[in-house]
Image (cartoon, rainbow, N blue to C red; front, side, top):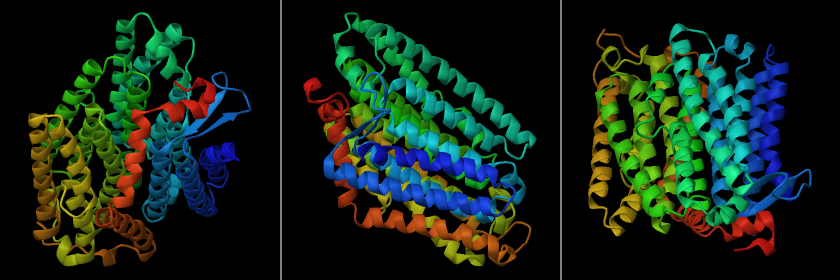
Length: 502
């Protein structure tokens, strides 16, 4: 049964992708996609319940023993990420029923979408470093298809940049995999946790760690490897932008958290010091880029970068409090950022554009939409008592505990600049009148489109408020995840057996 708990969140989106492709010329295809996302959410919740009840779960596919076969592993962090992936997937696929045109559905939108979700889920559940590469490629290929679906010049230009820079990431990742296998003879992550410290040439291990840092750093969009993201995320449909913003960069952050707590911990004073200053630079450059933009989606895209800095900062501190903050920030940001992109899509339909200088009057026309924007915007900026406040609070607290006063100051300053960017969007898009004297109105949006677009926005806003107003159970789960990351004994034992426990 353990293997089925682990495999179900992977099998369901793949089966859904095949069924949606076969039914792409029928309206049934979209409902299959919704049903598949709902089924995945149920499977992920069952997996989460099993992990919270029994601890780390490991399954050997085909009954090949580790480290020779394909291993799936779910600790608390993996289970949390699979659940939040399923929530985001369901929200975005419902939203897409109102926003994605039939023409793109017939080109395979739902098949690509579900294949990408399968790739993201596989990356969270794999226990093998080579299979992590495979899931990254599944995610990359399907996300590229979604990015260029529609074939506009802007999309193709963004797609070329997206793929070219991710191929650089792949090369660094593969080079690191090859060198790691040459040194240890294994790519099973649990076994690597035991064998990497025994490698005679630890300086070479640190070099390999740098390759992984670059490879995963590109995918996470950290400084100075982030420039592909703002060039790409504003070009596809809003549904695609939302799921990209919510999930794709978080896979890179997850991979950094996994390998730099499980495998590369022999030279923490060097590797995690680099991560510390990378995190600080990522926060600052991202928020400054956002402050300089005047397009709704471009501002949100740059804010993805700045917020990634907080997550990497939690990892770099390498303390329980720091990792609690990093994990909590991951969950909070996926919900909030996806929701902001979904709201941007509704605003575009009501006001007729994304450029802040060309839109306005949204609050007067749709006050409820204005409220729905303020909830994730305030959360992103760190206003209490929303989820972003607690995430920032824990990360800054961990930074101060270690005496990194300057980095803590930067984290707080970035929060203030985030408020500036969100205020700029509010003032331009919602508060000021439309520059052309047009009255924006949601009544001009077809009801059949508006209802499925509003449902997930409301749902994600409510979830943000629940996390903010009642954070204790979420913090407890983050603490469990942090403890397992800092002490991987349970992870190693679940994969390799009791006799392998360090």
